[in-house]
Length: 340
Image 1 (cartoon, rainbow, N blue to C red):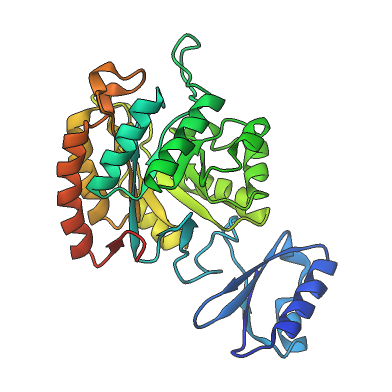
Image 2 (spheres, rainbow, N blue to C red):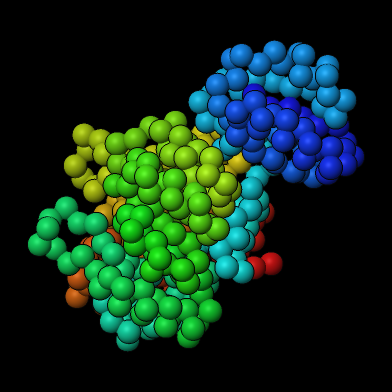
């Protein structure tokens, strides 16, 4: 249930109305846009007489019920696009960003070389795995805490905000200096982790699970936002289908559908979707064309020697060529890359 407030309502009256609603046992989400201020009620609102609430409160212009199970992430509640700020880098609402870096942080020399190169090519955020979820228990699982420190060293060298994956809530104290917490596909429905990152005042990049619907993705985002964190970025990274030619099947239709359903920014990860290096560039171009707000692309200074996912990683020269192409396409779409 949402209530759209009349223009110019004093903040004091809004706060009193929110306190009244919360005294009934509901959570509230306040959305302030350029044209409207909206208060969303989260909980079982079936017992509320919508018309009576509107008639008894002169600050309300109108109210409506939200039929979808997701409320705070719903575009009905927040009609305008949300802009998420990752460090000094805004994403969404016309700002397109490219996140790039290796699948795994392997050494200080590797991550700093990659960070400097992708920044020079136009990437605006650095990704790198310190903790790596792997199908095999014998595969390389990252450098852990040391990997986080190497990412921060690369940030000091380049100024690029850091995006890296947190595996569980016990690791969160290690991520105090990380700019964006990534919740990976395998953890998309780890509800304890979602609640915990929702209590952190940090942007969260939430990846779609390999066998999850868009509604399930939005409900996972709802877990985060219901704890007070509205800085959520959704990521389409491919889903599992019967097709075996690629690692996953990139669901490009997810981008415009999500943009209809939610105000949150939506980015695409073509590297994990394809698992094949030569497909990354065409899928990245397609993501721009369907309206994505950003890309996450794996790059490595020596993909043949990468300790994980080398087959899907671009080398630094390939990434530079791709970025030159993408910049033209992003500008053609009327979006901007960078901080302004």
